[in-house]
Amino acid sequence: MSGIGFHIDGSTAVLTLDNVAKLNALTIQMLDALDARVQEVERDSSLRCLIVTGTGDKAFCCGADIGAWGDLSPAEFSRHWVRDGHRIFDRLARLGKPTIAAINGHAFGGGLELASCCDLRLVAPRATLALPEARVGIVPGWSGTQRLTRLIPEGAVKEMALFGRRIGAERAVALGFATEVADVPLARALEMAADIQGLSPRAVEISKNMIHAAVGEDTQAVVEALGSAAAAASADREEGVAAFMEKRNPHFSGL
Image 1: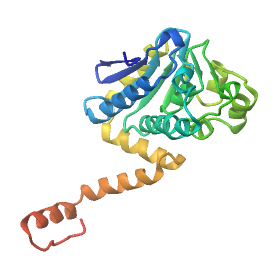
Image 2 (image 1 turned 135 degrees about the horizontal axis):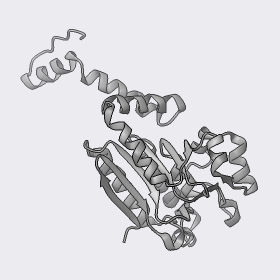
Image 3 (image 1 turned 30 degrees about the vertical axis):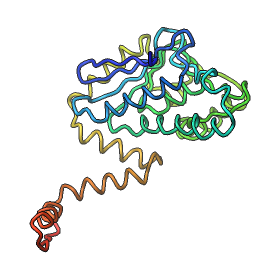
Image 4 (image 1 turned 60 degrees about the horizontal axis):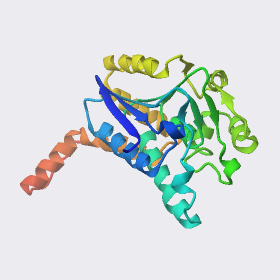
């Protein structure tokens, strides 16, 4: 069992964290499955949106399973657990398609960081947000002090990370972290995903890349991807490839 559920609803992929006995805490197997599913969504042109949610009504995800990292050496913890998690979360954050976190319950630690990787977030009325890492002697390691601080004010992040305070659903909306409070976040997320159907997939992807460049999300790769796409659509690219295949000098038009 990977601890990750996955199904397709029309052109929307729904990824479900399914470790309900541990409040959907993330394990190594779950991280690997998350990574694989995000790659699958990226490569499937028929899919237009990804929704991430959790099983049950208590927790979206209460962070990383301490049993998965508690016995790791400091070097293993830093090099593998933290860096691998960061790489996988970055893949989700930089997915070229819109993503929605349907936060059906509490989002703590790695769960809050996971939700921060999505484009929009919907929260259940009883959901709370927290960064409780200091209670077990560690710090946020999957972008809680970085990406999250781009989404909400520095003071709110410090409330959670330095003082152990929790933020409720209504305040999450007021801070701009969540789009809205929804009684059934997954149902609302599916409604929002349906709105994407009338939009140009390419325009949506480019818009997302441009917005990410503005806020510093993978800016270098975004700039090169946009530039490469423009070059690939040019007559010069067609001429350059044709000249190479025909073993002749190219005649570029600048178009």
